[in-house]
Length: 322
Image 1 (spheres, rainbow, N blue to C red):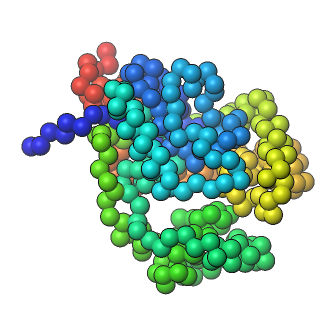
Image 2: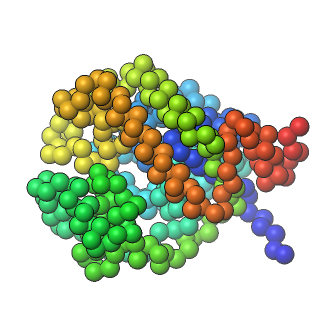
Image 3: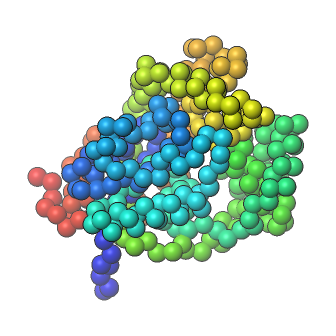
C-alpha cells in the first residue's frame, strides 16, 4: 500500500454558527497552525461584525488568510478563491506550519479540494443583458426560467441568489447546455500538496443550532452590526451603484436583510426575524451540501468532543485524547 507522505492539513466544515471558527482558532494555537478562511463573506472589506470576521486580536494571535481581498462593490469567484487559497496553503507549508481550512462555503471547498468544471468563460455583454432582464422582471422570474431549462441547478440555487442564477443562465445561453451538466462532468482538480482530514462540525440537534444562530445575531446587533451596515451604505461606490442588493457582498446573510430594513421594507423587529430566518435557511443549505461530502466525518462539537480530538490525534500521529 502506498503511504501518503504529504504534510497534513485540516478542513473544518460546517453550517454557520456551529462553532468551527472557534475550534479552528483553538487548534491553530495548539498545533502551530494558520487558518485559511473558506467563507464567501469574509473576502469583503467592511463586512466584519455581520460576517463574524476574526477580530484584530484573533488575527494577531493566529495568521488568517483569504480575508479582506475585495471591496464590497466588487465580485470574487470560486476559481479566484481556489487560486488564493492554494497560494496561502503553499506559504503555510513552506513555513512548516499546519494549514487549517475553516468555513462554510461549500462551493469554495469544492473548488479547492476537487476542482471546478471547465465551462464557458464569463461574458460581460450577456451578463449585462441578464441584469437588465432582472431589473425588469425580477430575479424570481429568472429563477423560474432557469427551472425550465435546468431543473437540477434551479433546485440548488435560491430564487434570490442573483449571482448564481445569472451565471447558470449565462452558461446555458452561451453553450446550450445546462450548467448542472457541465458540473457533472467536472474533472478532478490539481492535487493539493497536503493530505486533508475533512471534518464536519455540526450540532446533532437542529434546535441547538437555531438557538446559536439567534444568540449570535443578537450579539452582532449589540456589537454594532447595524452601524456597520450604515457605514457600508454611505460608501460612494455603493451609493452610486444602481442595484446594490445584487452585489454578492450585500446579499450576504444578514446584510441583505439589514439593507432592506434601512430601505424601509421592515421594522427593527421584522428585520431581526427575517435575518434569523435567512441564517437558518443558509444553515439548512450548508447541511444539505455537507451530507453529500462522503469523505467527511461528522462530529457534534459538544457531545463528540473526545472523539473529535481522537480523530485529530490519529490523523496527526499524536497520542490520543486522554
